[in-house]
Amino acid sequence: MKPPIEILLIVGLLTVASAQTPDWCKSQPRSAYRKLERVRIADPWFEVYKIRPGVFAIYEPHQFEEVISYLVVGSRQALLFDTGMGISNIKAVVEELTRLPVSVVNSHTHNDHVGDNWRFTEVYGMPTDFTRTNAKGSTADAQAELRPGQICGTLPAGFDAKSYRTRAFHISHWLHDGDKINLGDRTLEIIWTPGHTPDSIALLDEQNGLLFTGDTYYPGPIYLYRPETDLDAYVLSVQRLAELAPRLQLLLPAHNVPVADPSYLPRVFDAIQQVRHGQAKSVPSDGKREYRFEGFSFLMS
Ligand SMILES: [Zn+2]
Image 1 (cartoon, rainbow, N blue to C red):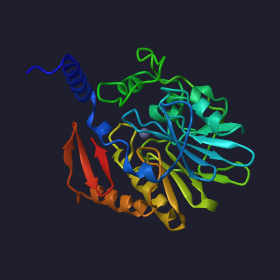
Image 2: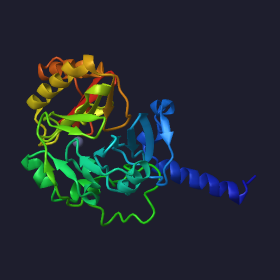
Image 3: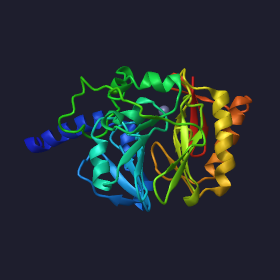
Image 4: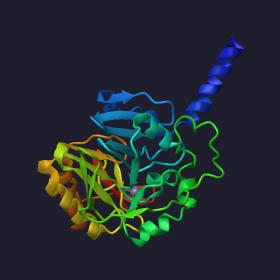
């Protein structure tokens, strides 16, 4: 017996859909998000979670990087730690969450963290050549984010894939290690953590025991294979963050999941030392070497 035409059509559509669904997408939504407080916003490209009073994670679950930007709100002003992919409009999301003036600080200037910097007038940067070069904008890294298998779900209506690039942005203030930014009733300290890139920083909210780790630590494969990565510097930076761990309550990483236990920092330090001393085994992964540990890994060339 022939199945009715409708069933054939549905089976056909499902086959097409599953052929296009990348593996990383099948494990979404990540279970950690179930425990978090979701904040409804208009733009379906982003998901927003309230992590602590005045601390919002702005997550982009539909692109492989699963990048997370953070809005930290004080009594006088707000700080946006990264601006995401630039695929949709993060500024509009921020304006739904606060009416205070917003300054942008970047965890580092890889394309997936500075995509919407161009929309803001107050942008802080680290005084490195790497930062200055990236502020001029670029196309190749942005286009690579749209390769087959990189998108889960649908791109925003009106998004033009062909012209997608990281737009140039203007840095209005330069930051240095140890600088403190007072948002009113909340102070954030810049911790320079070169390694992943020369301009990588973490943000410390000492009073609340929060550390925004950028790409120096997140639960997933940590990228340490690009030419701008300095492994010796990375080891020292992770050591510095690990020393902060006893004073911390929560890590807020820049990819995958916006909450992690501070006990990961000494574990990452221990793991990277094992790798540097040739005591860890790697597995081949997509033309790179991956050193796997519980809850994270290092991806190296
Ligand atoms: Zn990065």
